[in-house]
Image 1 (cartoon, rainbow, N blue to C red):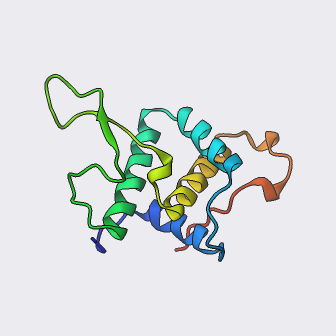
Image 2: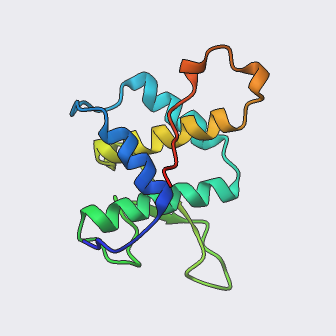
Length: 132
């Protein structure tokens, strides 16, 4: 495990899901919300999802830096560089905490892209507080 790996977004999302004191996993409805949200992400946002997955694996498992975590599969490999590829994951191979982190990321991303006038209630916006 690598404790010194730093990614402030991961730390923020982890602190938010840690406030949920239950050990329960996300629901089937939340799994669908997570998958649908990720499907709508652009390349840069998908890269951030991969970094969240990578940081979580480095902090919580013995995964090596260049190993694809959680049984991920390299797909669409580049013909000019073997290190460039897309990675396919099965959400069932993620630990519950990582699923919660990714769901929180999807929600924050979704609401950050909405116009303020389209949000009907304040309590619909996921908590995202950056402390100084």
